[in-house]
Length: 360
Image (cartoon, rainbow, N blue to C red):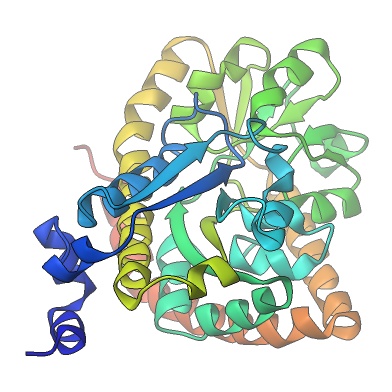
């Protein structure tokens, strides 16, 4: 059987499950790449996805293809990784694409937008819908090939020094928030701050900001936000299913053998699943710990949710009229969201509503 036919027939899942690459891969030349992350090493779950991917690539190539992972700030600033992967300073980057909404809001559609897709819906849109095709067309303009690589699942709504009792309490609130959510918060009166994860605690402690969001209980406990802001809100309506992405410099990728390309794709998919599994497994215990230490849990008031939703839809409508790249992807995204929500209403929501009302 021809090598290429064997690879295609076995499928990426078969190669990944075997934990080793076909013998032909071991004949490839040694390769050393660098990956720049936007995250600090202390956040082992979100930063760790890049390490998981790199290890899988090494394992499946018998050590022939080595990828060194560098935390935000080691090789370049956390928010500099898009440019780094684009211009070839590094071959790879791992990041939250909505960090770059300032360059173009369209980047956020590869991660999360307020009141967008949840994690399962996002994965479905990327792999089985038009998400991967459309976002790759967009990234082609900057010489990057993107791969889904991680999702946190629905996030919490952040930490606040004072309680949020109504939409009026959002006015003037200085809040650290990543990506597109800041545009919507700004519209309802907040003052968004885009601060890297490793710098949030100090800003909150010093009072430079009034509130901050990151991911959820596991990371938030490690970062110690409960020590400087006692009020913990949910849900993170701006991040119902934020997807992380692996950026690969297109020229570097095109120089790889077909086997190495398949291995990168497979390893990224493995890390994509593993990240959310880790969060789903670790967040429950972390939330219990936070509450035992005095954290106060609150659901966002209804008028905050409704005001934010209205503002988000206004922003999206304006972008449809002014940004052709956004409009092309968002229209497809919105249609997928509409149908997915209809389906989830009857299945996931119905099941979850019942289970969450039971004493287990």
